[in-house]
Length: 395
Image 1: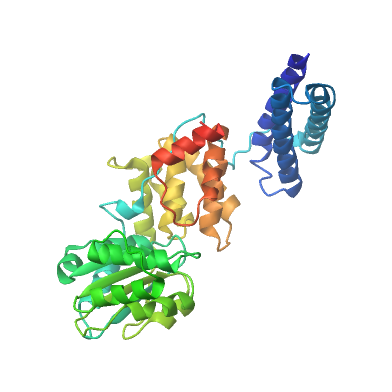
Image 2: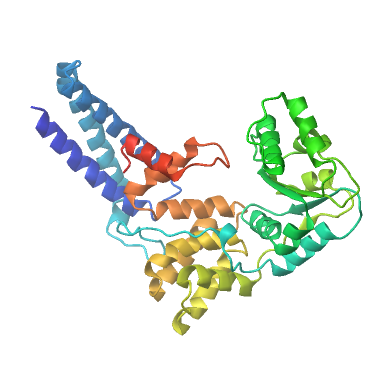
């Protein structure tokens, strides 16, 4: 008796999924569509619960004769509403929107660890000069720029450069994030400076031990992604001034934070990539060690220009283009989609992430959304993440 209901549910949900995939290309900001999608997802979960209860014989008759028929009726109503409201669009394949691929893997490379970074070379030289030269007193060098502009990438390359490694006795790199834990941060710095993995003292004692361990050393501490002035006020006393040109490098999106932490060195505002650097980075990420075909050169420059000189946006867009990198029509579709999704807004990074999400195959979208369960800047072991995905039934 249950099988006919399940067959009908599967048929209606499959039909709705197909419709949503087509309509969302044109109406991805439509609130009614979003509400209908959410309702459909909730009903699908309710159907899953009802079927599980029937199989486990928990209130089986109630779910078989009441829940499943009701859920099926509601799903059919949604299907009718969607088809009526957007019937004119269902027969069209919009040329200005990007079509999801057929389960093709998306390859993203990490700009941070790319040995041949495009751009930043002059910026790295200037920042290294600030860190090595200047006053003997402890100094703070703030790097300021918007999200996705490459602050962390540039700072990481500076941190690992031969000039910096040979100049400082000890170095430590810590990510602050918006919801940092002071004790964990101090423990992380102390561990990198001393090599000690565990220091069970209270915060004040740990801060004092860190200060003592740094006292007679020329040190470089990188505080990546600082969001507020209070963070610096809570940490600054841990960093002694030994008169030996020790330095602290701070990256932040907020100019007021940079102004608050600076001492002798002015804020360093990281510039956007030039059009030439943007095009070079895009082509490098798409074609890797291959040359960009001449027939794609112009459109690749147009796409790069739409990315507004933001490395993170360029890398995300390259991941989309890479699937059909030799098709000029695909480049033009992505270019037009960038204008549709991004427009002239400042939330470029988030909008590009949405574009990337919308171009994921359906079976991979829950995997990406699941990442929201973790704290900002959390370190997630790949094996753990895969196990969690398997436990949730995503893979």
